[in-house]
Length: 202
Image (tube, helix red, strand yellow):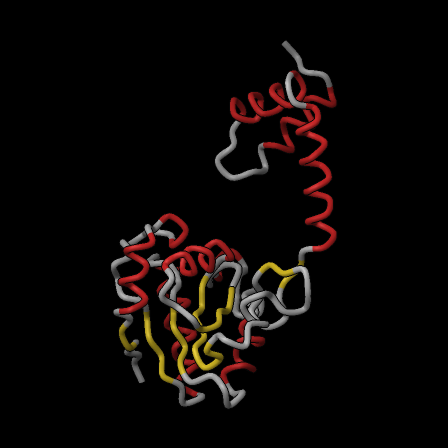
């Protein structure tokens, strides 16, 4: 059976979400249209407001509704510690561990030259300007334990050392190939507490 053009557009739109395939998008669309049109309107309003008002923190690139996110604007945080992560979800995961009280820098990806993702796309110039601000004393690398994540970590470690900063890498309680978003709080707590210096070739 052929779906109507509007329904086809809705199904295609839902499939842009991670992990949503044809069957999942059909279930979602049919549920909203059959049983919860009010819920669909709430989604429309919330998504519209979020797209209009949520941007990136000018300091760390975390999602924010103001120039600085809540973490960067919190004077109680240790401004000398900067933890570099790949995604906003990684920030939430580390925050839930409850052991880290420094600041963050969100790359929104990892180095991948084949995909056209270089330092500029990851906001590295913004990060490098902070490395020489006289406040930052330690760069904590919390990129994923993937080939690209390790390459990104090595590149950032070299930059930090040029500025005379201490560089550490979270301990590998995080499994190889794992994403921080899916690691439990206990493992992350241990990984942050037991972070180790990063050795780079000279």
